Image (cartoon, rainbow, N blue to C red; front, side):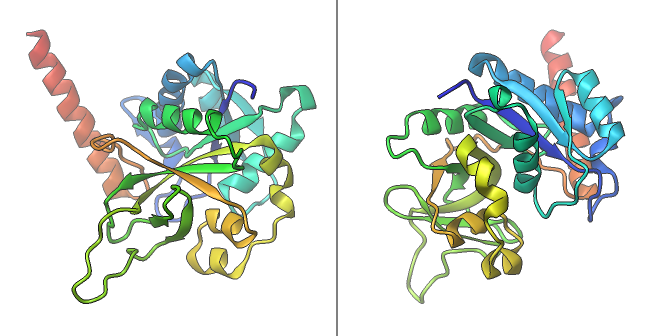
Length: 259
């Protein structure tokens, strides 16, 4: 397998927080923070970092932050569709064998999470087409949940908290809070746009269900406990406020250590 690439789908339109990737955080747009986090993760992997966007302002900010940029202006239903179009637009020699998808609104994504997916894909004897991650043992209201089989492959993803509980039952293992981080083999991106969205994807609004509905197996990496501390995805204004408060606390603690 060739060296992996870290690609960041970054559309301008957002439903819950207008132009969120261009909102400033300590003098830099949010997308620049995500690019910098991806670059940190990319160094030991020797990975390219590329932003895939439909927006000139996001493209310019990503370029200033140090990422390669590909423009995809066609309307698409998901980030994976955007990456598939970008993959097809590149010359064959520039198409990576493994693409790790980092969401544009993940300015605090831990490098360890990206590295865990890269290791899992590289070590996979069955050559699954798609990998993702979960925080094991969490079923958080409002978050996406995943349940897995005994081999660590996804059985289902849902916006509901799964698994449900029978009276007297208990959640033990094989489930967790899904993390929107993916690794795709290039051959899956090459045919992703040929896979028709199914009723489960349309009902839940979860693109990974397209793979399951077409009979593809998804490997799920259980991330180490504690990795999610300080990991804030920005979907709303409240998330942005939490992120600012976290950075303020981190800066204050750093100043105290220096004193």
